[in-house]
Amino acid sequence: MNRWLIWLPFIAFAGLLGLVATELSRPTDRTVRSALVGKPLPAFALPPALPDKPGLASAMFGQGRPRLLNVFASWCVPCIAEAPHLMTLKREGVEIDAIAVRDTPDAIRRFLMRHGDPYSRIGDDKVSAAQLALGSSGVPETFVIDGKGRIVRQHVGGIRADDVAGLIDTVRSAR
Amino acid sequence: MKRLEILIALTPVSAFAQSSLPAARYANTQLADPAKEAEAKALMETLRCIVCQGQSIADSDAEMASDMRALVRQRIAAGETPANIRRWLVARYGDYVTYDPPLSALTAPLWIAPILLLGLGLLIARTSFKRRRR
Image (cartoon, rainbow over all chains, first blue to last red; front, top):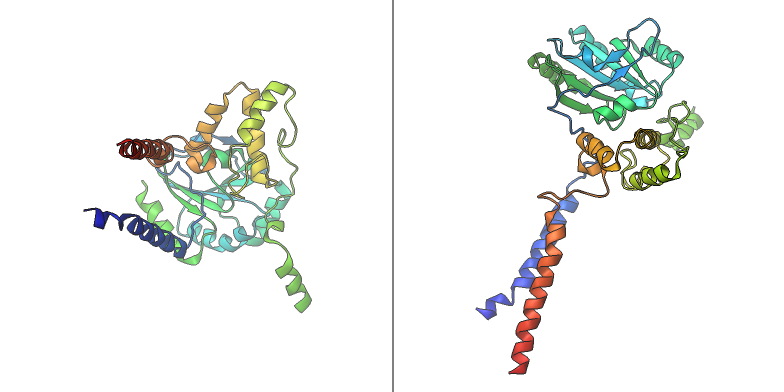
């Protein structure tokens, strides 16, 4: 019995070494995801970011139709890259609202003129209040809100061409 | 052209990821009441900056951290307890946002393991002392 027991520390050490080796070889995922996915959209109310477009409040969601909620900023470079794909989503009939983080009307207008305007409403989030309420960790980020006002999916980072089909599917199944 | 490319390559990414807006009210301004400011400061030191990830929001210059400081100070000023504010953030970002993780199935070994090891040590000590006396 004792003869076998003497190997126990060695086996424990080998196990620990194996654990460390596998974890080290696996690429780390540092994305901080919102803990609100699957839960109702938190309450927020933002004034209009542009004078000719309505602002955004959480009460505007959950009216029976799913919507996309895009968190963006005119000063954000990946937002430029995802702009054409948001336009594609809009052409496919997806309704998109936006939260403009730490932005000014002039800069937003210039951004939309240059890269297209897929948004029905844009809320002005000067101190990231709505962004923090959503559990969003940066720009750009896109939330899919279903017809009952529940967050069904969070897409962290820019939308790429190969994300579009999946997002359309999620929106269509999120009644 | 080549020179421009090099210049762009040398510009740190963070230079792009900053808005031109001034910091939020209370992001870098202390609360008038020293007791409440101390309460807010203590809380800020135990909340993780979501963007920089290795720093607390009290230490970080990131815009999101400054907006989180503003949120903490405003809520403390409005009479909310630090525990409540922490709970609000954990509900949004998960336990990752706090440097003071709550007791859960995942963190329980951190607290229980030292007690178990201490118990084991005492047991080993007792048996070996008994053996020596004999």
